[in-house]
Length: 97
Image (tube, rainbow, N blue to C red; front, side):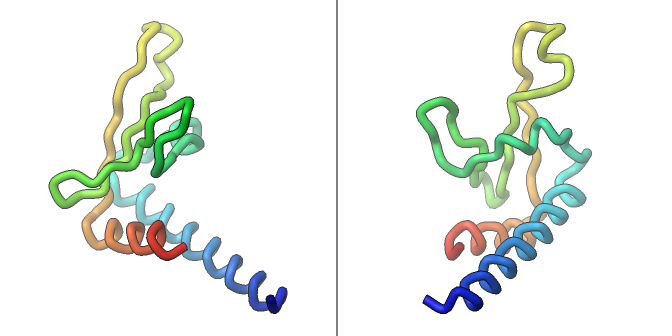
């Protein structure tokens, strides 16, 4: 492996992901809170189900955290959808990286 090329590729992937995040953040309605974004997962785990879904042509991010959760003692489901053009880029990133 060429370590310099690997580092460059990883940096390019990180830059791409930051731009995709910006598209999500600005293009999916009201911006999410940082605590909602910290737990985004495209695959199920033993502790939590995934929260990235494809539905009706849209890439949807479902979060189950909100600032009133401790007051209400229950979660509220919040769904945000990326614009279709940005969603295609995100799916390509998740597929190939």
